[in-house]
Length: 220
Image 1: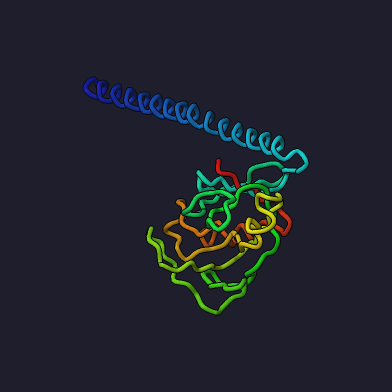
Image 2 (image 1 turned 90 degrees about the vertical axis):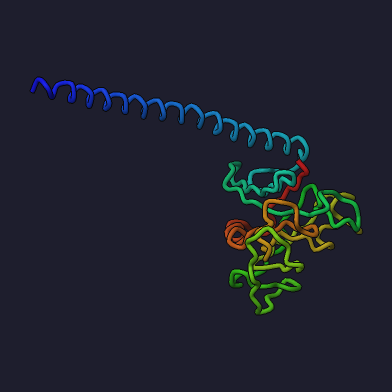
């Protein structure tokens, strides 16, 4: 037994050291997680405050926010952030210049929803299912085709002279939120003005939102 004591003691020391190490890891993990959560809440509060100042006559309880520089779409319901999706906006940037193929900025609403029941990857033309299924490219390369797939949310501009009326009209320009066959390019500018999403993501968003929902696009 005398010879076993050092061995037993070393096992106890090793066990105690392991407990301390795990505790330190959990404390540090909590330390780093909490500020990220608080930062996220602060960002949401800042966005809601900014929108209430910029559009004082509009309610922002339920809306979609598209951040062009972040290449991200965020859904807010009942004043709370629900989910984020990566997107692709125009390769020409964001703006209101006529004939620019830019993604329009400002206040919009979902005018119509198309594609309910269309299989994933189904190609839509003139907002109707063609019966064809796109080959989804998951590598970051262009297919040379601007296929609109799976689901469409059409956007109507609400700001005269910015995204409503004449050549600047978002609805007249056929600006959509839609699925794409070029999923590998999602997360970077790749469209001709629309907001592209991965096919599973546009189905998920489509099922969560209704016609008339506010959509704000900002070149943040």
